[in-house]
Length: 361
Image 1 (cartoon, helix red, strand yellow):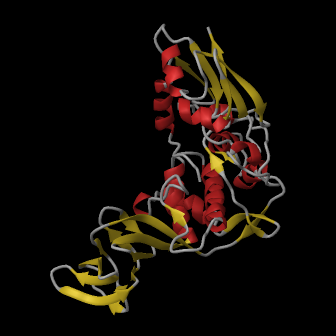
Image 2 (cartoon, rainbow, N blue to C red; image 1 turned 30 degrees about the vertical axis):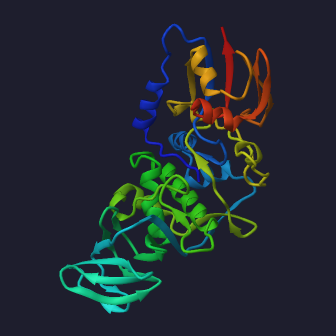
Image 3 (spheres, helix red, strand yellow; image 1 turned 135 degrees about the vertical axis):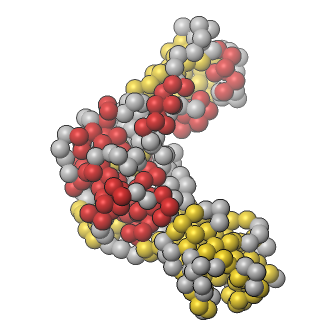
């Protein structure tokens, strides 16, 4: 998803980086929030929990016209891919063979096929296009995981996939997306939306999700904590549904006071009935609820090179969403200008969100 990792110490460090620059800075950008702005604000959920709301009330606030339902399944997470062998231990079975959980094994690709070997004892089985070992494995270079490890031949390379129950998946997501010491209601809300997102965005092909911010940050069993597992278990199989189907429950760090419609929060996004802008009254608990960035003339002109001609004169916001994040803007130079998206400005300038306004002195 895009989703970001949002630990409080990390955000405080980011705030420090956004401190006012030296006196030569002449462009000031004042903004609000961190992330795309669509769906649940994690710091907003934290604030709601501090004010006594339970996870049902929190989820209901951010996703209009939805209901809580129950669903479960399995999730296939791509952990990585590349050359060489995949070494693991802890598995009781693999490629149709009984394995010793105390021994080390490896999957490798030979002549386009996956082969299972035992450390120091040679080949155990020829597995075909993919090899599988389960359950509860420790994978060298990755960590400990519930479910099974799947090694899939992709040409001369090998893809490492963890296939795990949706409950096991969510246990490996929640502590990597919010701090485990947050209020329990906020952790429970995160568990529900992580489960919903994971089930709603499964895909055709060998895997459903990435293990990083392209999907949700997933660290497997080795990253689990007692408190976050408690939140997952308290909401077992609970998901957000829209018309009986799992909802794509986007979420992000900090709204700045209001979330955004899906058609405005994402470049090329479309309107979704349950992803509408809502007030976020308790999001000010976030250290980046409001932020300021400053640039010198030469610095901002370099970052926006190619979007204007001559010297940069101003940046005019021409269309906003409901929050109001920037949808379109015009970058105006002394000899020429161009229209750009809010996402382009955010990317070029390294801003925390598209809810930003520009002044020049």
